[in-house]
Image (cartoon, rainbow, N blue to C red; front, side, top):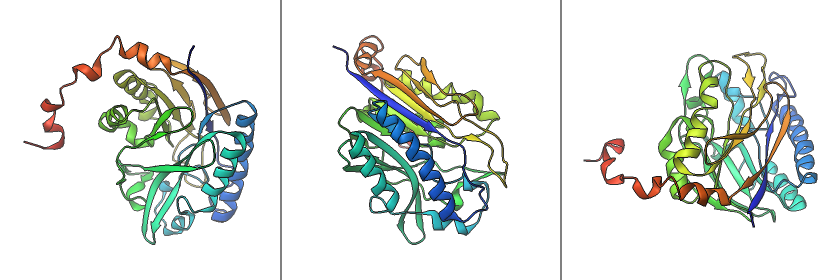
Length: 290
């Protein structure tokens, strides 16, 4: 009997202008996502992932300390608490990417993972922090992640998280596979241009190289006043053979749902023996070891 898990991704546009008060933006975006979460629950989604820092704009388009006020504690902040209630209500695992405050002045780009009974399982902090002029000033806002590449044993599957720019680095994607991930979610905020071609290339490649499923999420629309480009959506699931099996549109708020047959992981790995044949003792140059 196949081990099917119904999974979902939410891609959304910004519901309030970024020049509005932060609390108003967060309230509006959370309400918008709750509507989609409730829909996912009614459709029987078992694991759901939201987009990168889902409750606000991609504020890294500018460098202003005012956005520090959008941070929350994990797991004790109000947004994670709300998501715990929804997870329990719908018996749904939820991956919740928010702007995390560890202490005053120390902030991370983080995703909290909540199990289907509403319990908090842990968090992943984004490791690779870009600084690209113009429009991607992430080092101004985020300290690099320091919690490794955890895999969370949820009720339905063992899942990992890799956030946005992380996807350009195969090393962490490999570690997630070595740590037992069956599904890796990549909540993102990426605009049209050079990255769009890579969007459907890199993550299916991670899925093939590591023999797991990938759920890739991107927001949609443009965000005033910065207008750094179009967030092109196209959120998708791909299987361990690298085939995209469900995908959203380029320009609409959407819930993407797919049934993932986790038995395929064993089937694929029985043919492509990448874990057996890898040679870590020959890769020391990657880390600078002698």
